[in-house]
Length: 289
Ligand code: CP
Image 1 (cartoon, rainbow, N blue to C red):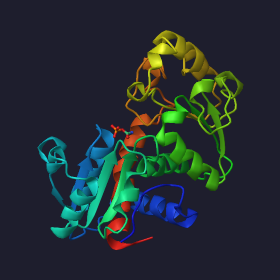
Image 2: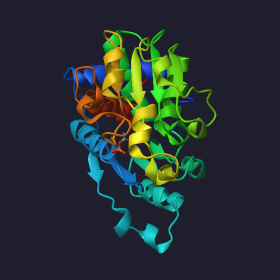
Image 3: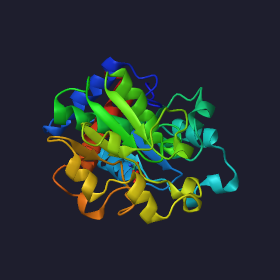
């Protein structure tokens, strides 16, 4: 069965097919699957975990509960053995969020479908797909759309997944961040250079848990230098939109009052996440593309 591990090796045709199928689910199509899945979340999550659960509910799937704190992981069981156990008892797909980048390399040989719900600072393919769906629905295309990704790029699996997918699909991608957080990307420190011309401002969460941000910036300094302030939003062109994968540090990467402003598609992204995850579950369990 197909895995979904990274946007790097997903063909454009498959991406567009998943977006189309998600759109059909959004329009009310239902295509129940007779199968069982497990959500294995080893890192905290609200959106990804809950929207997978909602998608699983809509797809008529049986979902086995799994709590890391009450699992044999605490007795030293490996991720491989946990996933092989799921396979042995008849699970069709596992959705995994894990702090280790490319944790899925150790699962080679497992027959159960693996859907990556985020691997450390690596990839977050279902977030990228829901972001692409949001952009596509807004502009009717992805090719030629200018997306400015702003913030903690080096630590962001969202930035990496989206950079790869957006470029493949012909979008123009710019990166804005403090020099220390640019990772492998050529970036600028000046959001003001792009704010008047970009179609999409994609703000990223400052990942406090992955580094000592407080050593670099106060909240106020970060907001002033790299954040989407009220003054910057006023300079955005007509029709330009604001995105953020959330969770949000309100008042740090984005002004509190902009989170639900007219340009914001932040909650639309979350809604689209359910339909994308329905399409991904179907792809993984039935091999549809
Ligand atoms: N965007 C996202 O992955 O959110 P969660 O960490 O809440 O799942």
